[in-house]
Image 1: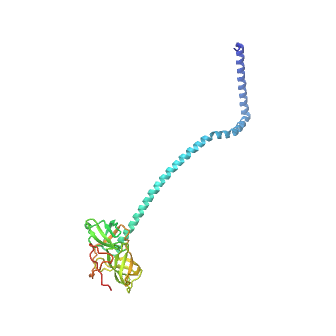
Image 2: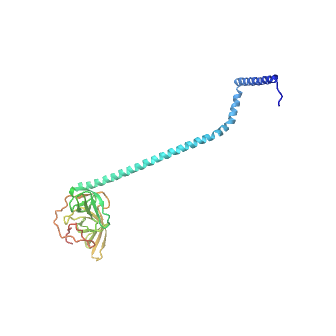
Image 3: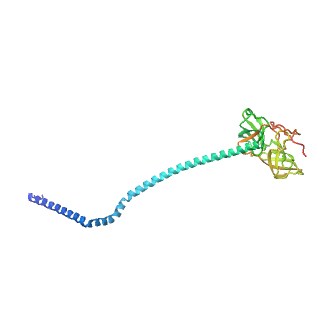
Length: 307
């Protein structure tokens, strides 16, 4: 048990504490006065700040790294959103441009069709194509107009390039056009250069000139047009261009391959001639091509006697 300290000892401790406080105050006042007059403590503080500054930076580094990571994440998310928005806008713009290009091409094609009709002074009717026959052996298209719009059997169909075919079936709201390349189709033609009369037959994917006399003046590159014989097709419409000539199996005649003048595999409209009868008198009937039989809906075609 510690010895008891009397009142005198407690008083001496209080006096000693008071003296230490007075000394500290006096020292603080002296330092403030000396700093105010000489400024030497400012220099010491500056040096201490230089020494302590790396520690401050090291202590604040985690906070700066956290801010940088948050800023990078926010920036990356914003950029990803902006990129997605720009990609969507680019896709929409591309679709609009493609649609405008398709519309421009369609307008140009229609202007070509109507321009060809106006230049020839033809009485025509614009007919949209509704469907195409899926059977590869039947080259036919369905038109989106029919008897209610004045379409009749036997009307010739053309486009800006030339002859397309003829109407072989008419319904109230639709009509069927037999294309030149159909195996059941034959058209009396003539060589534009010299007027030699021939017959062009459909062969599925092309046109063919059959029974061309070897002595006739027919050459590769000759343009073939309708002759007007038979009264089904008006004369002078482009049919195709001769791309090749070869002898047939009998070696007595030539066979010519024709590239069609009309764009039979493209386009969404054709022109129907309202007046297709020629003023020429009909001649003898044209026989059906050797490899095909005549289609029942077709009226007999005409040609002149072989030269």
